[in-house]
Length: 388
Image (cartoon, rainbow, N blue to C red):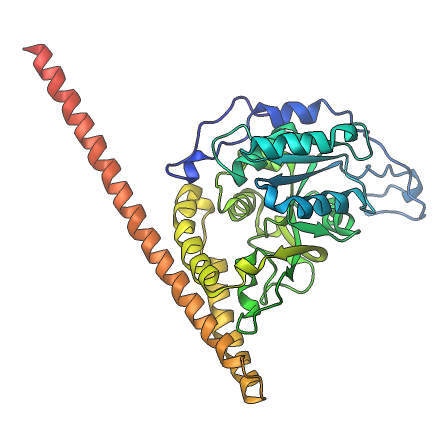
């Protein structure tokens, strides 16, 4: 159990995110969970010599589904998101809707779901209590969650009916710490013909190059992911607003091993992509600024940071992706070359963002060292003056 609340981590925008406090542990321990289940139906001996008919099968873990929202512009999408969780084949123990610094939206949600506190599953509406945004809102919800597994769904994503059942199946193995699924893009204005599927991560969706079957993955996608509550406590929650999913996965893998973070593509959600995001401007800004921000996030991770996933993505995109676009163009696809060019441009923009982030980080660290040196000298001078 966590012993205390933790202060903000790092500086700047990422530093606004607060880590998990005692609330997450205390809430979880208030929930009574059965310790025995029904005996297995098959006969025969297991590896430990206990017959299956006498083995006590542990109950499935309790699951809290967390949906964070910040704008009324997504109201109808959020209603679909919550409704999709209510219709799951495996019901969660609760649905938590956490509103990020929008009083009007909070009161609207609280009134809309006022009669659902005793429903199955119950729906609770809360407010982000920290200064940050998405990462902080998820921390706020996690602190109050009752489930042993915390599943995160975006407010503009609707889950398939078996999403939760498939997503949480890997947790039967104790070594699994986090599991993510596949967000499939649903375009408001149709998929741009020039847009390469290797860059669907720009929309927060699964992209070409991810595994096609269940297996370890360095980074899950925040629109469709889950984690053991105890592990989220152990890594002290989400440390980043813009890279909360990456940050959490790296930290979990660092303490549990890379095999502990699992991607299950059969657990699918439909992630809405508005027309405003199907543009070149949105594409280049995401490629540049996401990778610029990663530098600060990596700096805060310490030993958990690794660029292995980035290097693999770049290699796959520049070899398989570019070649595929050229072959498609040779077969008559007029936009094949455009997709190849977009891949090259996207990788170049990502590299530029990384360099810009490294420069910005170096400058910030130099300023901090100068300020620390000045403070030491000023303190020494003041002490010398008092001695005289």
